[in-house]
Amino acid sequence: MNWDDETASAHEERIVGAAAEGDDQAVEAALRPKDLGEFIGQEKVRQQLDLVLKAARQRGATADHVLLSGAPGLGKTTLSMIIAAEMNAPIRITSGPAIQHAGDLAAILSSLQEGEILFLDEIHRMSRPAEEMLYMAMEDFRVDVIVGKGPGATAIPLDLPPFTLVGATTRAGLLPPPLRDRFGFTAHMEFYEPHELERVVTRSAGLLDVEIDPAGAAEIAGRSRGTPRIANRLLRRVRDYAQVRADGVITREIAGAALGVYEVDSRGLDRLDRAVLEALLKLFGGGPVGLSTLAVAVGEERETVEEVAEPFLVREGLLARTPRGRVATPAAWAHLGLVPPQAAGPAGARSGQQGLFGA
Image (cartoon, rainbow, N blue to C red; front, side):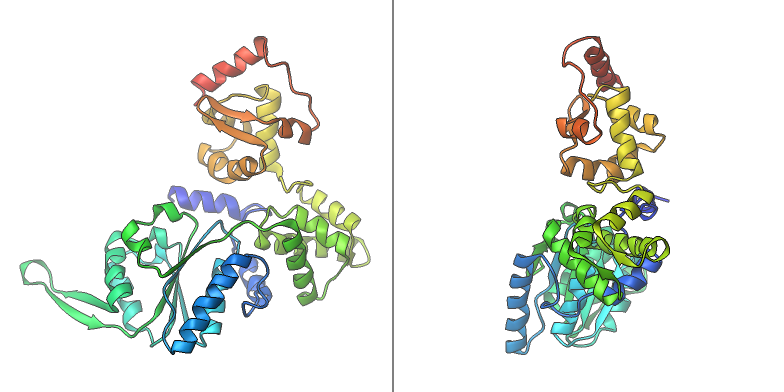
């Protein structure tokens, strides 16, 4: 198992993880909006994409290749399906890790229909030979199939029907410039605002036939870490609680009690997030402390702390990464109800040592 797989596994185990596995995928399919009019949030992306698709339809041509980047759970797969629906075209779904050889990609490309949408998730994890084949396919709608090996190998050109590639990536910086430049439209998906997630929760509750009041939707939205996928998952867990321990109606009190059972606090932090903060504050006086030392203190792998817990803590302004190590912010002390120690003194000196030798 490689680093990406380990990090993905850590996401999958958390109720506030953004990866979709198992039941999540089936439920997501039922909750996904079917067109741009139903899609909530990402206003600029929606407006720009609407123009691209309408112009293509008016010309009677295939749409430009589209690159969608952003954190997991923000709607990249949903938008790819909406593109197919808006263009009235079939969609083929695959992923970068599934394409390990140029022949894998050639088999997919050669079977595409004219105007078909090819959705390539995690495109940055595609193999280099397949990536180089994709350059020509995107630009000239042609691939060269190599037959034979060694000096006797020959390249047979294969013309492809016009198609639209929709690439999705959580790490746009890992895409090589030649590939990135071949996309006619690129969009970055932003995290959602609470009021947008309230609309997502309310809409999903209606589709799930769950009764929820505005305060209950706001409570769930506020703990969803700016991510619709997490909001929908929390809604389902709160629905279960309301069904078993209440009258089935989701109010603010019911939502708060349910998410307390699942250890998701008022800012969306779960057990791992709070363990990292508590270790940083209580054991190391707020830092600076090295990443490896912090990981040992919470009993997790270094990569899990760095890739799973830290991004949200940094985005929430609860933790800072510095050259000397990790440092808690005043907001972290306030969130856990602790009083920060004095900046000077023996405790501060000890924290400094951890930052120097624990990295």
